[in-house]
Amino acid sequence: MLTFSSLPNTEACATSLRMSLPEAGFAMIPTLAPSRFALAPLIRAMIPAAPRRAWSGGEEIRVTLGDERLIAMYRALAGSRRAEQRITDLNKKGVLRGHHSGLGHEAIGVGVGFAVRPDDCVQMSHRSGMMLAHARGGYSLKEAVLSQFGRARSHYANVEGRPRVLSIVGLVGTWVPMSIGVAMADKLRGRDTVTVTFFGDGAANEGAVHEAMNLAGARRLPVVFVVENNGFAVSMPTSEATAAEDFASRAAGYGMPGVSVDGHDVLAVHEVAEQAVARARAGRGPTLIEARITRWEPHAHGIADVRSEGEMALARERDGVRSFRQALLERGILDENSARAIEAEIDAEIAAAVEAGSVAIPERPDPQPLDRDAAFRLAYAV
Image 1: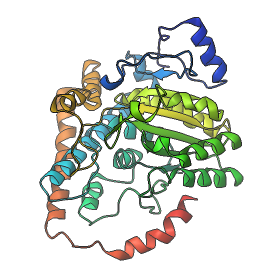
Image 2: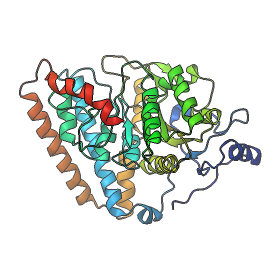
Image 3: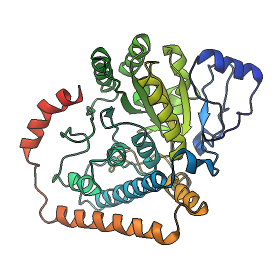
Image 4: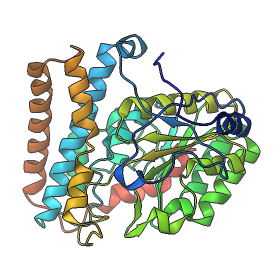
């Protein structure tokens, strides 16, 4: 097990936490919050306290996960970062259009992706979705890049033999109740599967999300809610959209545990996701995970960012991929040559995909796979 220490806090707040989150199974441990949250106190007595997670390091990670799995995590992280960077660059050049960059969100997708089974149903987000699909397996970086050119199915498509997914829809937050339906169907059928649904801090304030969490808590459904809180809903700062200091504290009102985690820290994300999935699989009900993250790019290409260049540069300093790479090097799990070999292999796969996709970009994707997906995706998900 990883070792953690308690948050600097009063005993009264600690008691309040334990009372508000019965049997949650999450320890209270410190985290480094993104800079935009730095002025906010970690715990307020007026709001039910939410535990926070961060990896403290140490040789125990080798016992918990093993070198092979840690290297696989790095491969998924590095692949996700490099593919996302290339797709983002192609959008900036006008070769591709309409992308919502997920740069900076890699640790969330990979951490959760390594915590679920192929038969679990995951409803991915527009930020970390590609990264999560790649981490789960069955979705290559080549497919991820080619899908941006309209030459391969996206990570939202259900394909037999791949892990179960449930697509999102265009209206913010309205996809979350769909995941509740899948979870309820699985529970009624006696399956031990778990549904994981992702949404952003903007969607977290939509009524549909609250209704979904309320029903999940009331029915003790096997759901894990993951809110990717990067501090901005397009241009609206989180501090102006909600009076709460964090989203995880809302969980107590729905009768479920809530945990706030450093979204740059792949091991911390994996740890809380693994515990939440195990809790749901055991029939103990849902969990709300708030992953605090810094978004590297504007909300979408073509939309000006409200942050200054200095603020965006500061956001990019929180690099979970670089930090994890360095941690593996320091512990001798990877050496520089093996790390570079992994990265060279990834770069070659991405370059080949870009070359194949750029030959002749179709004006419209082939509609037949899309038609098949429309009928197949929900049936396969359920």
